[in-house]
Image (cartoon, rainbow, N blue to C red; front, side, top):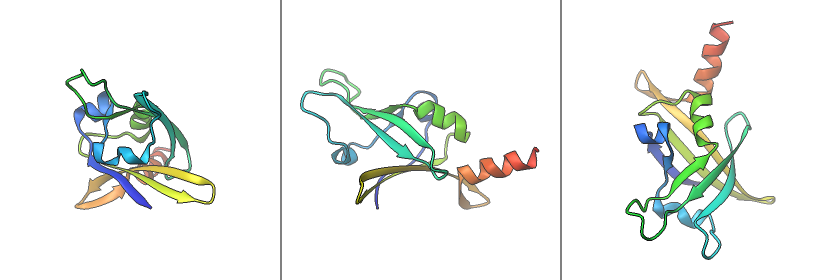
Length: 126
């Protein structure tokens, strides 16, 4: 498994779009002349999310690649906040390439999977 991205989320990441590292673009082959590619990533509960990775045109002063698509829904569903950590991984297998996504939050100096925190909070309110 290869970690394509590990980053602490910024305000822009959780309100608009996720900035993606240029160094990991190799993991998403983009057809010649295209500026976007769609991919599916699975979270820790095996939910599938449809994302769009795009690069901006050569004349755009903001050249960093970004992820959109289901991104903001993912943020809302997971209750992500500024400072949470996001991981995007890639794994090649018999059935092709699989992408996985997970988020963590620091609680009492320990990073915990956000999904498990959401599930725990839901069970406390029942």
